[in-house]
Amino acid sequence: MTLRAPALMLVGCLLSTRAAQAADGSADAAQAAARLDEARALMDQGRFAEACPKLEESERLNSTGKALLNLADCYEKNGQTASAHARFEQAADRALAARRADIEKLARSRARELERRLSTLTITVARDRPGLEVRRDGALVPRSSWATAIPIDPGVHRVEATAPGEPPFATTITVGPSHDLAVVTVPDVAAPPASLASRAGELGAGRGGDRVEGGSAVPGLVVGGLGLAGVGVGAFFGVRALSKKAEAGDACPGSGHTCADPTKLDAARSAHDAAAESALVSTIGFGAGVVGLAVGAYLLVASRSIRVSPAMGRDAAGLRVTGDF
Image (tube, rainbow, N blue to C red):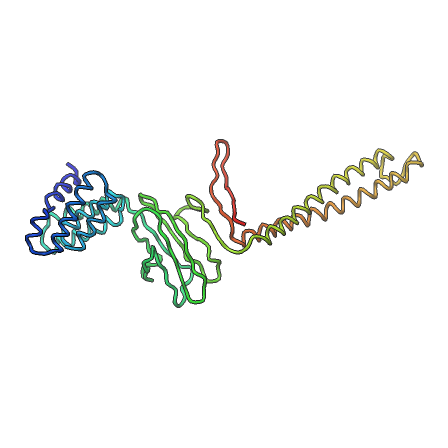
């Protein structure tokens, strides 16, 4: 028999009825028992997301070892592994204080089972500075917890940071359900307030791609457009240079400065000179165009109005770049 079967049996044995709690003469105890009964009915129907808040209220109204065990069991079934682990450990500590070795053993074993699946979130700070506050899901993260892998329930979590005289930093990250090692880095004050969410052992964007928001993308578009025009000019005059060179060769084979037929010499020289001029313009156009495209791309990235996400197809894989301009 596995540990889980006796665990559920023990949890069931520890549940008390509303009448028994009410006999204590405590209104809170009676309400706690009522929430406990309602939660049990919901759990029997597999409605754990609705049952867990009722168990939280029951435990708040009348904190007991049995309430903790039931709440931990509900959290686990609802996929809240970190919360379940913490409640099992708390129940084990209470059982130890009450000299209930059987309950302590049960709670510890359930906690150990969960440890193999716990996901964590590590919040690192690129540079500490006076007044910097970091919050996870609205709760202040003490400095002692920075750069520490803290067990966390799977799902979407928000990390925020504020410091005097700085724009606020905020990002969200989705933590996976089983042993996901998530990392969020709060940037230096000199860095743009961009999302630096990453995952241990991974490079680039996360599951859905990180969105980075910032300044206007118009300068990048303008410069990039000019660069593209420069490439177009270079291409046009490059083709013209080849055409004029061919024209000179047809008129007078050779260098274009000597010709067996003197009547064609002027035409050959004219075409040869036009080819040289077009080649020069083509070179200048291509050079300026490439520089313009590079500067435009840099300005677009610097504007931080881009999304980068994986792009997968039947015959190819790569990155998809989109933006809000």
